Length: 127
Image (cartoon, rainbow, N blue to C red):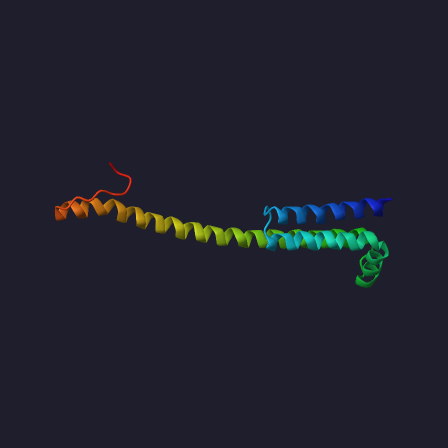
C-alpha cells in the first residue's frame, strides 16, 4: 500500500511539473531537476527492491538512511545552484542599475546643453 502511495505521489509530481512547463510557470532548467526527482521516485516506488540492492552495494545499513543521504545531497545541490543563480542575477541587476544611472545623467544633462546652445528642444512627452 505504501508503494502505491509513493507511486501516486511521484506521478503527481511529474504531472504538476509538466503542467507548469506547459503553462510557462517553470523554466526548463528547473523542471529537469524536478522531473529527475519525480522519475527517480517512480522507479523506486515501482521497484522497491532496487533501493535495498543499492543499499547493500553501497554499504549503508538501512535503505531509509540511503534515501536520506540522497535527499540531503540533492537539497545541497539545489541550494548551490540557486546561490549561483542569485549571484548571476545580482551582477545583472548591478549592471542594469549602472546603465540606468548613466542614461538618467545623460537625459538630465541634455536640456542644459541645449540651453547653452540657445536652441531649446522639447523632450518627447513634455508640454
